Length: 277
Length: 277
Image 1: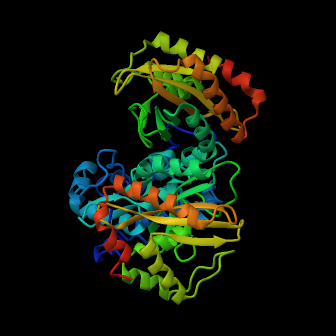
Image 2: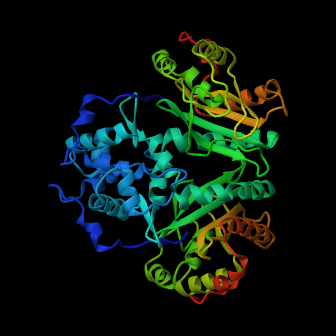
Image 3: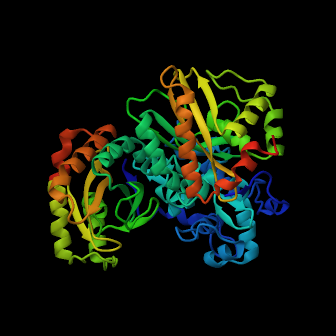
């Protein structure tokens, strides 16, 4: 599924602008965006402070969001993200949609390795993790489902960046990379060569030392239009199974998911050799 | 996690009321709510019609929602639910939160049966399915992740209803049940006896004939406060493994998940024998 990203057409700025200079919807959404992995339950005043608005205004918005079910109020008075929002969000084709198609194949791959299997999509200049299968005794990894990862220094990120259009790649390459703890920061020239390799081989490999010594092997999932819809990876302790042994299984699984998204293998070469490289 | 449900306090009605008599946030949310399992991509005018608002108004709202990432615009101009919304929604403790804790245990159960394993939570008078593990050759089932199911005529629904407070149960029992295709509709007295049995045994069993002949066996998951947080079930073809053979595995898995949510087994009796019954 190809999605128009980046700045929205001019009429997107025409929203209602009340006294505080920001459309009501933006302010409502900013109250949803204050929740993070480490802040899953917040008081009204915490929400107001984090969203930078008066408590009275926040109360009005939060009450409406809670009435609709986007927020839920705990017995201690704090608010959490609601099941109703999760229900609507589960209809996101690039979130839950890809995940639904991919899950049985991820499970097959997981049964082979018993470590971690990840599925990620690109959202602007980051990767969003939409699934992670992990055995209870698997090595510790950096990312949780719903979390974000940089494009330049993760295996799924490199796969997603390699599949993006050339202009977008330039934008990302021209910026200073996000510093990832425990990952060797590649200079720009090396990233370019790596992206070209990823397009040619269908495989990206990244080693990291934080939170534990791991190696990730990722491969692209293509949609019916031949665009890179998602990236799939496995993460194992570094020094266990070598990446070149893991690569065929990762690539085969990614191809099986692609086929189920309507991808026709015939156009593979166009993408893997890429006129963008 | 105990959540305050039902009507919101009076100040929830104090939202901003522009000309069309409905707060802006409610109207924005109504544009998100038009998406369903069968309508995952919609044009602007379809969204306006389904949300019952003028196209111009819908455009303003949709543009803001798209700029934030709650919606994404496809190349053909249609809109879908965005990954950004999915990302925020993944922080829902009752959605993704329970699911994250439960997933490894669901997988263990799934490996034993190789059919379907479901996880559901209650949202008002329905169950919302938050996870489903299915093998590719499993029998067809009625519900998808993010979808809703009635409380009175599904195994997970009965478990969630049995764990709800007495007033809520009365509200549900006094209403006409939702008609479920292929499920025998239990009269009110039988539902009451069933709920009492579910509290006593920790197991609910439902047979259905649509979309295929299946039997579901469900058990409650308790949170740290001893409240029913979710329901877990397995669904197998009717006539394969009998429910009484499946029940111990379902109950043991539900207890393992409960323990990981902070549930202390000591209070089991209070809940299973329930003063509510």
